Image (cartoon, rainbow, N blue to C red; front, side):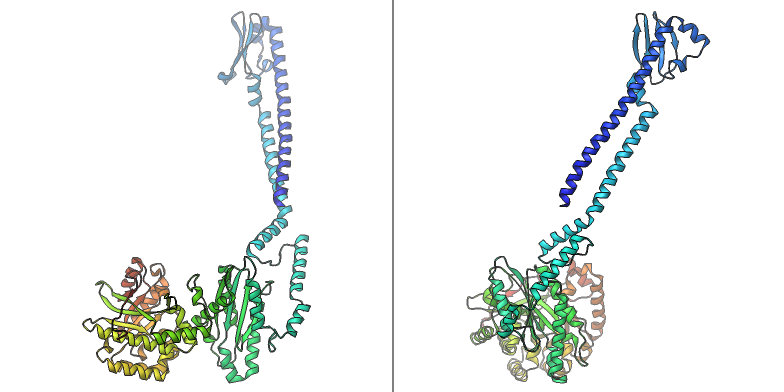
Length: 619
């Protein structure tokens, strides 16, 4: 619409310009005609008085009569009878008035151009044209300001797929907002369809939102559409279990209702979203027609809103809730989307405090996206068949480039022979209660490998989950294995997440001290991922700390991360704790880290993880 109006305005402006220019040239022609008439009058006068011109010039001043600075010479019978300075000699022109009579004078066009009247006329025209153009554009912009804003709103709404309220004060804006409210009301009103849902028991009795069956039906219907896209969020509030234990069921449900209100408030301006209660303290949210970046932003906003909820005394917000997110598009299957969201939730829980998580696009193959029951069956078979493959990635010493030790990385082989990374299967192992058996199996593999290669003195580090370390049966089996291989224990380094060390310090302290008595060394992993107290270094026999990749990434450009590393160095040096860095990708990072006192590095800058064929395994 604005384009059409501006195009029309442009045509009107061109037409107005034509009229102004025509007027200008008409005025100019009139002025030139006057100048030409005056010149002809001068020439007639000169022709009349030519014989007496020389005598009159001696007795009278003819400059004013013949034109000041216009007539330069009058030539009669090849003799100059009148002469004055006319200036601008380069434009002077000789004009014959009669036989034996001619004049040297300025041409009419030059008289016109050099006249103040010409410049006044031209300046006035230019100023008038400029003012006309400027005022007309200002008028059009002002007149179309509201329409332009509404057009921008419409274009943005089409691209983003949602229709927020129009803020412009214009009748069109009022009409759009009225229609929008009517649409939202029509979509959210208690229609016959909603009554049918209630009658068919698709709503949760305690909260009034949809239940699991409602959510699954909505997701399946949406996935059947063409060109669909969106996100599924699984929100689990573990803190509600604690609230239930301390304050009772009613208080826990009250907190769940506040969570629902927080989410609904976040989406109050969005027409389409589906919220359901799938388990006691687990909600599922379906948001169609969003792009990945918008979906990630929504996850951050949802988490921020949940962490602002006022909780009862004694409930820790840091571990209150976790969100698993899965993005889907046309061609995906509903059960795979739900399975991936559930796996993302377990990963978020495994990583530590309240947070959200989503796997990168393509990180999980469709075959790997399974429900909990299938994961349990798959992992139990993998443990039974020893389908775990170990890799080694070296930690390189600064300056010398010697290998300090190797970290053990684990993958599991699926039914098709493809390898699944620990980042994918470990969260599901935790959910299925299989962390300890997997950790023990990998630990045994490493011990056998080190026994087979006794001529080498390289140390190995491997991650053990806090669930395994707090499992009494696992610790007993671990002690048994270490006693079977006493020469291996000094070559073993156990890595434990810093966050888990801090949060389970009291329970882990005696367990870790007993392990060190057997010769095992301890490493605090993922240091700096979360803001926690480093006092555990003084309370536990930690030999090494490993910086999280978020601290290492582009550290040469991040002064705040450099200050963090310097602070860790000050803490570690008196305790004789060595500091390593994980995720070193390039020379600039490594150079900066070594200057800051990091003693070892690990990452793709040095080498890719190397698969080890452990000949001892299987014997």
